[in-house]
Image 1: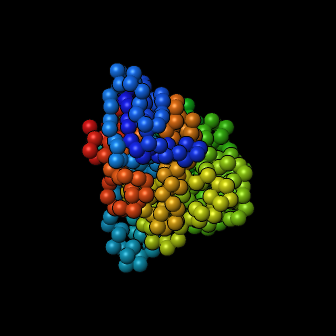
Image 2: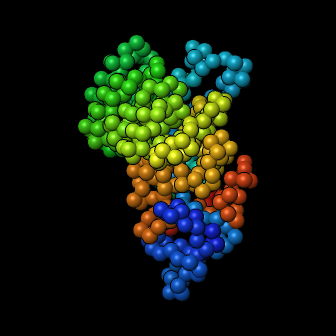
Length: 406
Ligand SMILES: [Zn+2]
């Protein structure tokens, strides 16, 4: 927790009016205490460090609202197979895909998972991300799901990046319950969910609602059970097949519905009305070579709040870098830079229920800032494929300097 004055001619506040200021931000005891035009009042300098970021662009610390942070192993061996036209189902049959990640995650110790998770968090931080959501879902059994959530919770205690945990046991049907989805659901509802809730290992429960995984009816049962235990809700919805996952998210008052490439017209209206945040994942569209993106423009026009995240995971989007995702949001979804930055700050804060504390440069919010070596916001996206981050400030403390961890 430090006191800090930051001066810049391009402070992208991401407040309600999307104000861009030539001015200063004053952070006291980790929180934004004052913002104004021009130079900061003289009395602030007596008890604060000063960062001159003129010529650079300041945004709120980026928020990655959808990641699968904790897992064992990696899947680069599937790259050539995919390019040779081997389908995901065939890769699964060979023991690859999510099955291989589940196997390596089960095998890894908690310390190994933490060490790998830390490397990813470091990458996130040096690319400007100060808060993330992290899902379990590569264990599927009791021990491994708990181990992964504990690993993320323990990392949250020691790492500058803040982590919001989500239990995603309903990511796939484990081998042990093949052909017995109901049995797996009962196990999650009766054994795993109560333990995780009681031990405060996850704030959210998420479900993969998709053909061949969990149907909307099954998803609803899981969501109802989770809600009773005090979880907030998320859902992987309408990614490939329009199953009315968006409608379900709205009915269950989920905080977010994610993916949404195949959302129905009714689903859009329902989400807009129920104020469910849409989390779109253009990096995944790119990486899966889908040739299609969620229709962000249509969702925005119809009044749905849109957030954009990495979907960091070992299979369909292995990158920690939100600046890379900005490129896909811009050139794949045709969003404007000023829209994209809101999708990764204030709207992402809504997607993890942190909009009161995070996501904009406003008085009372956390002193989380990303400072980019770029004269304006457009430049960050225009000059793509490199890391523009100069400094990162978390709770008023300098944690990245000249693009490197301190
Ligand atoms: Zn996901």
